[in-house]
Image (cartoon, rainbow, N blue to C red; front, side, top):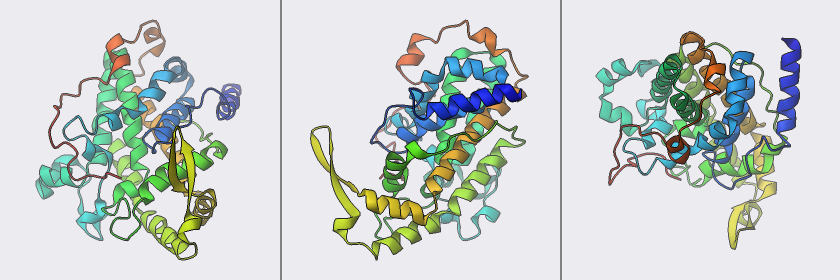
Length: 329
């Protein structure tokens, strides 16, 4: 077993410099970061799972962004990516019920969806993956694994836990994309992605809430340090211009980005590493609780053409007003 995990570590460290990494993107955490998190989570899995997930690693990687692709097409999708926990007051983690039915009784479903439902969405997708494992349904295992990885990763972003999600309330507009996109774009090649072996999660819903609480505890530092840095630099130092395709775009300068990353002491890397470990852990937990089905048998099956082309139908319908309140940069 030690030899096996030593081998996995070598493969994983090599992966950061090889084809195991998704193509660099200028998009937000929802594309660049999500693909990397799902991909690296595969290497946290035990021997009974890793062969299956490595066989389908391209699907797990590429479909990590499906939930973001659905945001403007599927009613209710936007609310699944965040929770404005500060809306519920300074003691929200004591007052908001952990379990969905109790929260609905206290606040109504409309209110909960208006301010985001990410911890409950993680639990919901965990149970969907659990059932897919029980049924040994290849398509649904892959689909729900990819989607679940996305929601877990989103919960690890501090600005996904506050009404001031883009600094719009504190004259810091743009900080959401800065934290999620620009910092990983410039720094992620140097991150350490070896996070160890996936762990069994006793309660997925309680684990999801712990993630949200940890993320929210970092909100003040994200906003506070950026505000402090803005007092030290002029706009011409804060921004620079880069060519993206045929377009010249304004971006946060490398100097500004490096200074902020130093001030928050590598916070983005820490949250990404935590996300990788939890994604692998929740996949593992679903498999264990499904009775540890033999995934080697599924390796002989082919993913359906429809699953490769587009996301599985979630049962929701498009709407003229699908984005709702939530978290648009």
